[in-house]
Image 1 (tube, one colour):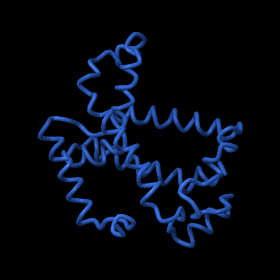
Image 2: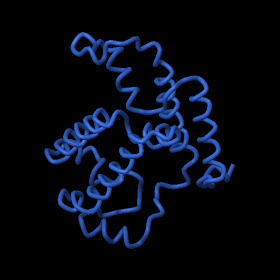
Image 3: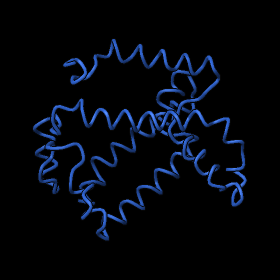
Length: 185
C-alpha cells in the first residue's frame, strides 16, 4: 500500500490519462470540469433565465458522475492516503511566501491565510473569493472551457484554440504568482 502514498511516475500516470482520453474520444465525450457547472445550472432551471442553459442536461449527466468521483477520490486520498499535510516545496519558495505573509508555507496543502474560516469570513477574504470566482467563471466561459478541458482534452485533440488558451493560463498564472499575490498579501 506504500506505493499509493508516493506520487505515481509519469510513465504510469501519463498512459492512464491517455487511456481515459481515448475512451472519451471513442464514446464522443469531452472532458472538462467547467462543463459540470453548466449542467448543474441547467438542472437548477437557469434555462428560464438564459437560453445558454436551455439544453438537455441528461446527455451531460455522466459529467456529474465524474465530479462525484473526483470528490470521493479526493476525500479518500486525504483521509487515508496522505501520510501528512506537509507539502514538499522548495526552501526558496517557503522563504518567498513567508516574506509576503504566509506564516507556515509548506506545512499544509491549504494555507490558513487564504482558506481558514476566519480568512474567508473577513472582508478581504470574501472580496478575494468573489472576485476570484468571477474571474475564473468569466475566463472559463470566455476561453470556451477550463484548464483541464483545454490542457488535457483540447491539446490531445491538437486544437489550436486550446493551445492558445493553455498559453494564456500559464501567462495568467505567472502574473498572479509574481505580481498580484505579493500585492494582495
